Structures are given as C-alpha cells and as structure tokens.
Length: 273
Image 1 (spheres, one colour):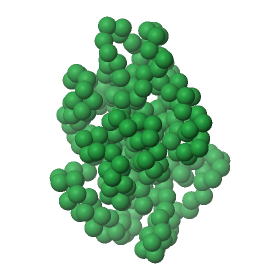
Image 2: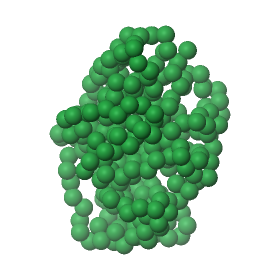
Image 3: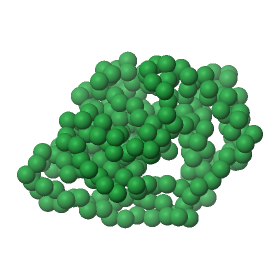
C-alpha cells in the first residue's frame, strides 16, 4: 500500500516549482515520491488508465518506516545539469502526506484527467511575471538544444517570441508566451476543481516572504506550521542570471498587460510578481 498524493504542484514551468517542492519536503510531515516530476498525466488518458498502479507506486509505502532517498536534478553556477541524492528522514510518530510537482501539468494536461483519478487533490499553482517566465523557458530549451536533446529547435529569443505573438494573434498557441497567459488555463481548471482545491501564489510572493507563503500552504494542506529557518533562502534549479533586451521586453510587457489585468481581476488581488 502506498500513500496517495495529498498535493500536486501543477505548475507553471520556470516559476520556482523546484524550490517550492524542496521547501515542502523539508517539512517533517511531508514525504517525497521517487520523482519530483513524473509527468504522468501528460502521457494521455489511455496511458494513465493502463499504468495508474505504477503511478501510485512512485509514492512512499505505508508499511516502510525507513528514511527516503530521491535523486534531484540541479543546475550548477554555469547552468550545467548534475544530480544529487537527497535523504529525507521519516519520523514514525507523526502522520505524513506526499505529493508531486509536474510543472507542465497546468498548461498541457486536461484537468478532467487529473480529477478522474485524484478528485480530492489539493492543487498548487505558482506563477511568475510572464515576460521573465517566457525568457527562462526559452533559455531552458536553448540549453536542451545545446545538449543535443531531440525535439528542441529555437533561434534567438526576440525572433521566436515575435513569431509566437503573430501566431497567438491569429488564434494559435505556442511554447513560450502562451503558458504565461495564465487566466485561460486557470478558468479551465476551476471549471473542474472547486476553488477551495486550487491555490495561486506568485514567485515574487514566495521570494519576498517565503515563510508566510509556506505557512499558507501548510494550513491549506492541513499540516502543522513549520519554521524552515535559513533553508528558505535556498533556490533550486536556478539558471545563471541573464537579461532581456529592452526593446523586446517592452513589446512583451504590452502584449501581456491586458492578460495580467484580467487575471488580477479574476483572482481578486494585485499580482505581486
């Protein structure tokens, strides 16, 4: 028997989900699965139906009381990927929960598929200022292309996002800008899950006052508040700093402005990027 996931960080990509996941599993009541991002539901309904038992087996066994270990992919200061083994102690005297953080889920997975198998899951959506998010996403794909991973074909950021703006203006979508139009997808998720099962935070909120955000999340998940101390100063899977050219930044700020205003109105609060 395995613990069933209590929470699911559904995204968005390049918004700090790696750090949030590591903060959560630092909590004594939270145990990790084998993978931070199994990307299970992104493989389609037929695959999910056929392999759902394998998905549950990614999470901690109820009978096993030993410490847990998982392999963590991380970027070094040069932006190169390496792996480290992380040990998570398991205190047998307390109740535990578990969860995952497949950050592609929010944009790429139909919420009905998640609801079919996890109707009571607590969803966490972490979003970032969309221009910076798009830039980081493009840099990630560029890194993947340089690593000779298949399926990643990018040029320079300005050219690629201008092409995508043109595509979106004609009713299409794209890889880099479309995921930052958060409201479109948020409405779809809230049409399936009740609003008390989906919490939205911004990366800016997490970075400025991480203890406050974690207090809100632990209350949401029904586990005790926890003092994370200096651990919340750490950033995980963070690429080296880079900047966007001012001209394309201004174009993108104008592109996203109406979408951001609509999102702020919908969630009823100012977006503190």
